[in-house]
Image (cartoon, rainbow, N blue to C red; front, side, top):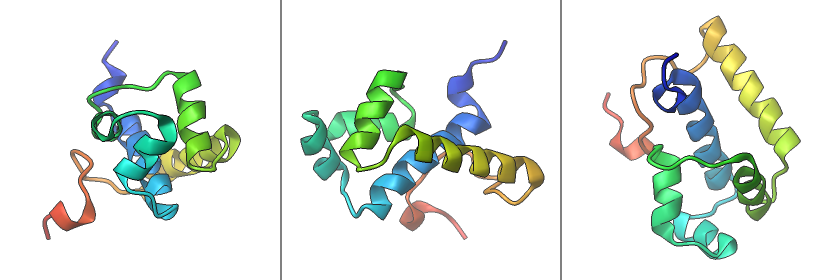
Length: 102
């Protein structure tokens, strides 16, 4: 069994987590304050260096005024789109838009 930490579905999960934060117009530091954590932890989670368990994910989403059901539906849609070829294929790792190449 391969490690899911470096799998395409995990990349999609992390991308969605970041996209939700950004859609709420929250910086990593803003989310960190809401969570009572450091900005470094937010960065580590979004980069895939640190994983969230389910209870942490629920708290993380609540801090962004999002619920687990909505997030799960969005994740499912993105994963289905990725399988169907309409997702963001070809990206090796998550990077902010400003760092993506042409």
